[in-house]
Length: 187
Picture 1: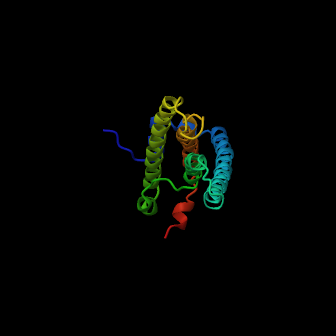
Picture 2: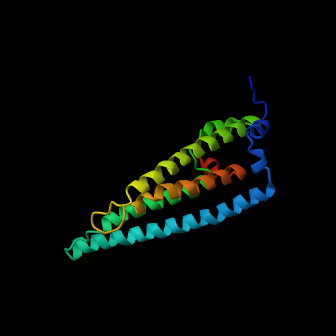
Picture 3: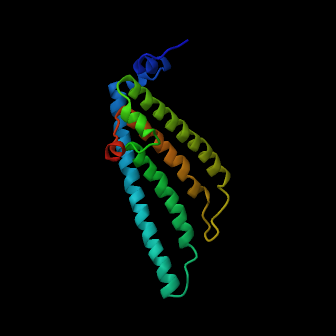
């Protein structure tokens, strides 16, 4: 029976150490993640500002001009999906992943590395599933259009695979260089 005595041996056993242990690869992944996470945060904030402006326009057109805008609510919903999926990338990078906080707090040494690896593996599997089915869903609805506009519904659903792909990079970067702002600020 295979017994894991040290997480480093286990990582070597599954073949990740040749990839993760290389300092050039590590610095390249962290650089790419820094650029993509910054871009995701910038675009998510921009989309939130656009959604706020569209919401104000919708209220203004409905109650002041007495002619409700038929397209703003639909665009707002789709932009919020993009905003959330891009925000998830930033949250993952800052350590706000689904994890068992108590286990991370009380574990020390080798067990903490094992817990971090299990969290990385399960989060990566979840995001890979979203990526796989998100691509399939976006492809299937590409001919369907919004009710109020002649725009493909695939653009709205493309937020799922895009956010999941960026999230996979952020998960790997978090594993290589953990930032646990969420854990440190928790009560």
